[in-house]
Image (tube, rainbow, N blue to C red; front, side, top):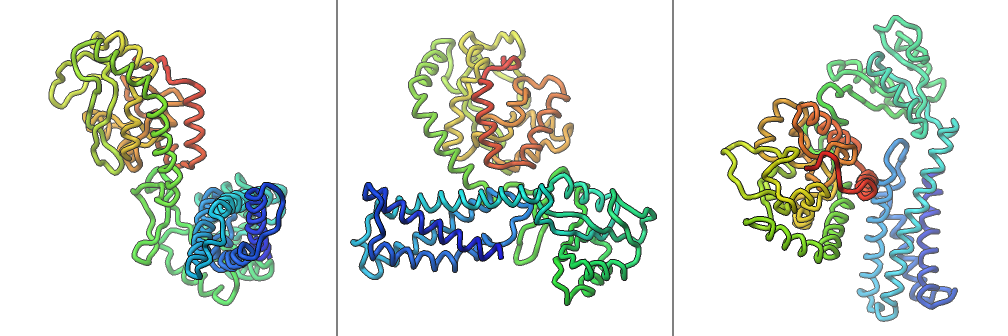
Length: 456
């Protein structure tokens, strides 16, 4: 029912977008002409045929809405592109205004995203109030079965409600307030009698026989059987299940951010870097002259750092120290009152203006605006064996600012505890990454300012 309603809403949004585009193009409210109406009808048919292949009408219960919005936008752009190609193939492109097509593309995309977000938010609100809930029976008890129960209760907007637990080895009658049974026959009878449509198997992979037995038992029932193995002990992170050569694979040590999800981040990085470099070009020229006059040496400080997947690149900064030689394989961090730092350099480091040239690295695709800060290669060699998860930070692009930086972890890491705190926040960022979190970090960086007590 919801799937049919969702299709109807999408068609309505596409039609509304076409009408708004025509009215905006004409300067007043007008109806579509014959060619516009024909293209609208064709695109509506394409929407019905194309959107399901993008997974738009599947259940998004408990899943992030930004992924849905991205899919809707990409699907709609493909539909409109196909419609434009049709007009060229039948030699009717001259009858359509390119400006109207542009208005329509933008208006329909905006309306589709607004409607999807509104429906998603409404369903989440209803589920928080106890409506539109799906009953879940869990096979497997403590500790992972209990963890799943806690997850469902902590996120009521996802719409899952634990009603039954089956575990032959559990002595208690309830688990976190949910009834427990040790008889498989009771489980099957309850699932069928109460029409439970979600059966979650919180079992280790070693219990393959039990898994097959349950799948065979409910093979003629319309029950969603989901195998949810406990992989929390394998590393720090939530593990994505990906399709690899047609078989499911669990990423234990791979980038937690997929290419599709990271697309908005990549677009933002290039655009933001270009805007910053263009708008601050006069300031950067002034700073470059000041650095050059402050002491003999180059304007830029360049140093090898690790990027995504450990690929090395040269990071750019305004030089803030007098030119000096370091012992091979050793890098001395700047300390408070460091005599190597020039007066201009001290100001640049205190205000973080020495980091501005790193937007060149962002523009070149070597860094991101937001991400874990990259450290000197010599520091990587030290901390990789001292701080758990340290090298995992390089599974994504390093950034100019990050979750650790806006939470106070800037400047010198003179104690191992400081680096552990920084890495902990970097890993949190990677595990909970969304484009919205990036925007929050950018806003916090601008709000709090670039200056910091630890920057010297």
